[in-house]
Image (cartoon, rainbow, N blue to C red; front, side):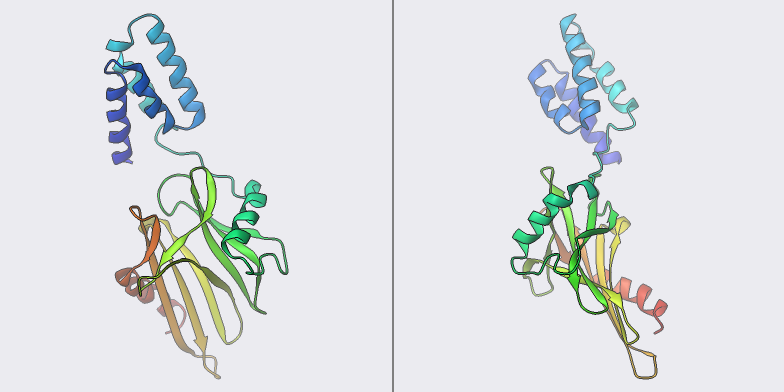
Amino acid sequence: MARDYRKLRGYGRWCTSGIGSRCSRLFAILPKPVSFLMMVVYTQLNMFGIFRNSGWILLSILVASPFSIAAERFDWKSAIPRIRQVLNQTFPGGRVEENYPIQIRDEGDVIGDGTGEAIVWLGTGGASTDEVALMRIENGSPVVVRFKEKNGAVQASTFLRGASVMHSDDFKLVPDKHAVYSVSTRNDSEGNLAECAVTAYQWNKSTKTFDWSRSLTSQFRRQVCPKLGT
């Protein structure tokens, strides 16, 4: 948040340094209601010829707004028709909605841009598991997240969620670590935990992928597997 504040403050000073067209870049990174308010203020100041020396006014309003450094949260449920198209394009032949309509199963701001990510059930899976995909927002539209695996392969992946007497699968969001992980367990014939596998990925802002993380995989395995009975 502090970094976002410094970024906005820098844009504010740059915007008010004398060239009005520069302000379009500042307005572009703000939520629409705040951007509209700022545009009105800018117009009024410019009209009276005092904008050049009134950068502090613009910055004060910007900081005072509770929405100034937060992006608008994406409404995943209302975007189901678009999500359906994206899933079918990303996973051709993937049996999307084979059994049931797709659903939003979980949401969280994992990558930290304020719009939020969603775990989407594809409407298919096995007898006791559901197949899900992680989606994020890119340029205002939902896209399926790409994962960089341990071997370096980059692809859009699906994960399993569900459980039976002998096994369980889950896929979790960990916003405070900008990470996600999958966990799979298997019990022996006596009901005791025999296996517990965890794979963790962390958001890479440069490549816009979730990359396999050795350290987080180990950390989450220590946290999650004991709770499952190991």
